[in-house]
Amino acid sequence: MSGKARTVILAVGLLVVMVGLVVASVPLYSLFCKVTGFGGTAREADASAPAAHPMAQTMVVRFDASVMKGLPWRFKPVQSSMTVHLGETSLAYFTAENRSDEPITGTATFNVTPVKAGQYVNKIACFCFSEQHLEPGQKAELPVSFFIDPAIASDPDANEVRTITLSYTFFKARKQTSASPAPTGAPTPNLPSEGHS
Image (tube, rainbow, N blue to C red; front, side, top):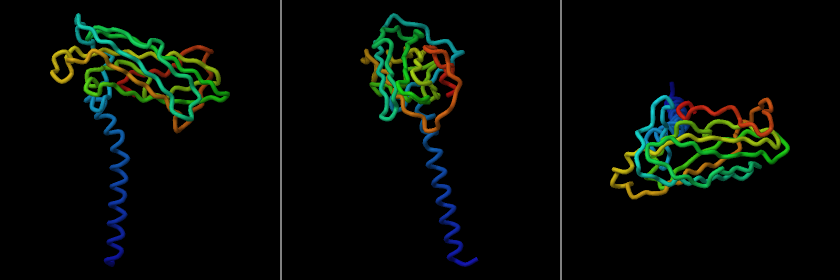
């Protein structure tokens, strides 16, 4: 084998390895953030595991919703905020409505602010990262079950936090799916636990 051929093969092999690392880095980084709460990402909680014992101390949780350009949906939280006890499992709702004349599949991402509080927000069940399919004019109610880890109260870097904002952004899914129309006003049935998203 000539030196040029060997160099080409090595270069192509290196390119394949680099592309593989780039492709793998996105899901790995996402998994890292979910497990550690890094970057304001809420941690995932096992639905079968009980939340921490509720404390008297409370936290205000605000909810924010937005839609990326190109997705003709109306998306908003049912409640703008709620006061929860640390360790108490709470349930919040968002609504989504397809305002177009065609079926659309959307996917939501989330973020927590302040960033340092992300590791203490444990979501038990959520619609984020799972596809939500809405027929023309269809509305859906999307629940989020979560609790705030009482450990935040003893963290010297985060114990002054009294308000946490949980933000969701919907965008049009890259791959559009077809689904049977659900009854008008009914929630979409695909709400996996956060641990299986």
